[in-house]
Image (tube, rainbow, N blue to C red):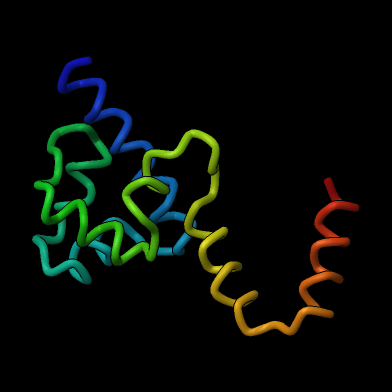
Length: 105
């Protein structure tokens, strides 16, 4: 696999996850303390982030690097947000939610 494969993969995944957060590319770039076109360049396959910046992006999105590349997880940002909320629920509420999820499946 070559540079263009990874640039395309990272650009597509980043764009989707950023949109899940409801941010513009400019907003995300500035919140990561980068120039305003930084995320746009990644999403348009013109650049790849350094490893340090990639980890910062994952931290910002509140996902793991594994989540970022997981083919099994279409909406990792939303799943992690739901997960954070579920941690506060008691067993009874969690069982109700599990029943609902299974029903919706």
